[in-house]
Length: 437
Ligand SMILES: *[C@@H]1O[C@H](CO)[C@@H](O)[C@H](O)[C@H]1NC(C)=O
Ligand SMILES: *[C@@H]1O[C@H](CO)[C@@H](O)[C@H](O)[C@H]1NC(C)=O
Ligand SMILES: *[C@@H]1O[C@H](CO)[C@@H](O)[C@H](O)[C@H]1NC(C)=O
Ligand SMILES: *[C@@H]1O[C@H](CO)[C@@H](O)[C@H](O)[C@H]1NC(C)=O
Ligand SMILES: *[C@@H]1O[C@H](CO)[C@@H](O)[C@H](O)[C@H]1NC(C)=O
View (cartoon, rainbow, N blue to C red):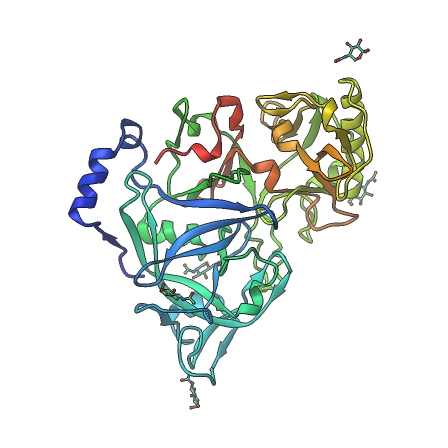
């Protein structure tokens, strides 16, 4: 791939940003690239905003941690002077493991050329896929230290799609940003082309007013305010586990999963071990079992027997706090009257939940702010345990979902094959909306 270009902002802008850069940003990692993450509260989906095309146009994409590559609706107002199709016989097409080559009988344009390398973009919310042509175009992201300075990848590879694949996605979204552990995902291309480490961090915000942040190519520092804190220093690490069997709709022979799995070995409620069938916590030879992290499920999903044991333990421990269960609101099955639940700086005062990893002192602690969901309806005002039943024999036994990740800093380090987590940053008096740039 050709060399990336650093486009300089006009002199006065640069001068302005030098003048206004605070002491906090001047010591942040200069190589980090940033993108805001916004939550759509009606669909509970998270979106990433990046600049695509020439001239750069802000584009909002569904954030999908597990997808191998990104895709964009190329039929929707595609104006760019820099797009290029990928011919079938090229080494790039071969390296994409494209399963097909296609011609197009509409007027030529982005996503419509002859002898074009094709891909199978998937909508991970509706679980649908289509065949579409691969494309290259320019992608730009601001740097963490100088937001006015854009770093450009002239040859970003993605798949086109048609408008039909956008069904089920939030309003204003025109495609999907794939952050999976493949070598063509968004973070993979940013790291390879810029010769930076293959690592990124996510800090999702549940706030309706302020965005969270994705930080690419940097292992830190990650400065948040206020008080000013480098959250990289709060990370605890566990190995990233490879699931040898992928589960995309269109399967690529012997291709491992590009999703992120971690080794949860037990669950504790208020420090007490929940009795679980431990076999379910490891990945079997068919790719079933284990614990996956996903930004496209809103609430953590547990296999039925784990869900039952976990909710029973939670109800028992809550009773010791004088919390009495009340009428449930679907899809949840444990709710408490809002008036009975007191609040703390880490959310509602409820039993803590620990996801324990490789040893007893490595655990992701989930406080009320992440375990509970407030449901206010005409006839009910309750706090519900924000975990749902995934049925028997699901692919992953535990899928950690969006609401359990909000206001937690999560680092996906594909280069070092490890996952870093901060647990709730509310403990440190900050939130994911407080990233300092
Ligand atoms: C199409 O894109 C151009 C360039 O960004 C923009 O000016 C125009 O408003 C867009 N039109 C529609 C219908 O979105
Ligand atoms: C991606 O990895 C595959 C092996 O899994 C390799 O065959 C391919 O060449 C790589 N593609 C790129 C663009 O580096
Ligand atoms: C592809 O080739 C066919 C046959 O030569 C032609 O009719 C068609 O217009 C071409 N499509 C494009 C997008 O150039
Ligand atoms: C535990 O789960 C495994 C995998 O689903 C199953 O084969 C086994 O029978 C279960 N053991 C018990 C005691 O339920
Ligand atoms: C629960 O209620 C009982 C009886 O009212 C009281 O004695 C006890 O202190 C309460 N416990 C907590 C944890 O609030």
